Image (cartoon, rainbow, N blue to C red; front, side, top):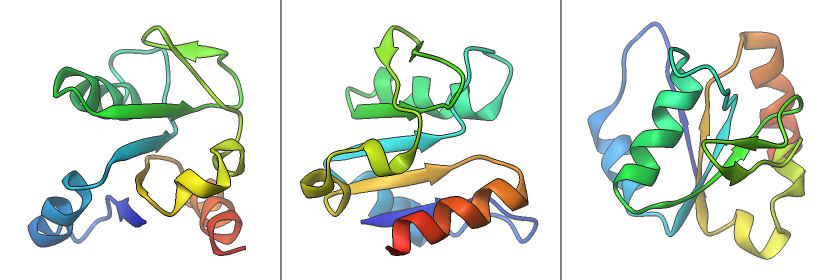
Length: 102
């Protein structure tokens, strides 16, 4: 599993290349709002024929893909084989990272 975080120091292109080789993706912070980055990233994966699961505590589906409420709801056997894109405010991101480390 790779976890890609966008930060103030920019994006590491080598980590992005590794991320894009994953079998599928979870997009934490996916939103129905097409102006938000969570939605843009989810659409990018889908437009490039990548399997992607939106993670949203508020939405049952995003871009016509069934969503899960928490990253822990992605099947345990799959979580080690996917990339996780986290597009959330810092306090939420910390909780997501703690959940992934369990």
